[in-house]
Length: 299
Image (cartoon, rainbow, N blue to C red):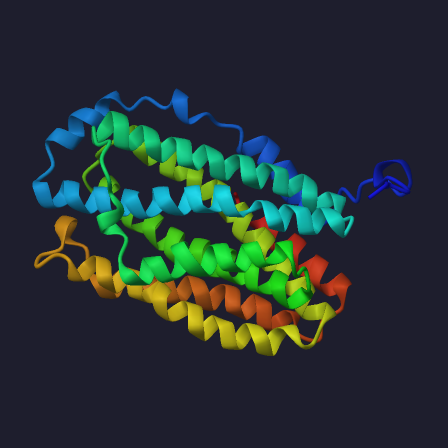
């Protein structure tokens, strides 16, 4: 399809828009190299862990690694959909988004190879609820955009990925990593990598909430559909947490199920409140709310 005009030589870039503000953060905070992290102390610390502690860290890493790879593989239809709509500011940010997901895949691969010294099959850690989300729901929702770029299809993709996979599973997993490793001052290189990952993911979630908010504000049919899908997707997301804890008679590192279930639900409810506020809002109000959130967030 031939181009008829270019935004940057007609209207210019909207530099104060939420996606451009996120792109500025990505350029400033997201340029870190997993290969530069020093994991030598981490490899030593790994050898001091009990079998159960090593198993739990392998389990968490297996969930993260497959999730990061899945998004690296599945995200392109969203980028293409946004590009076809001519939303150049959002597409600019999404270029950093895809790069960062690939970088996270690289980071966890380093952990497995250089810290855990594990190059075997870890798919045994992918439980039924995890399969339902990452093997099935995620590629289906993002892949559908190749043939259906309607507001509902876009909302499905952002809900599945940003609200559920990132906003519930990934954030709860990061919280678990920090709880385990910081309490005993273990694996400083891995902790730094997780800190940087979490900072990247906070921008991804902020974009997803912005995208969902503008879709909700623009089309009143999107919200009831999202409400229905939220219930369908939140159940397996919480199931991933339950299934991980059920694998251990005594949870390593003293972790407690209720702590992490409550954390996951609180993160979800916080973002849900922002989406509910978009109902009946003007696009200017959605932009203003997103800018306020992005400005107050350090990621």
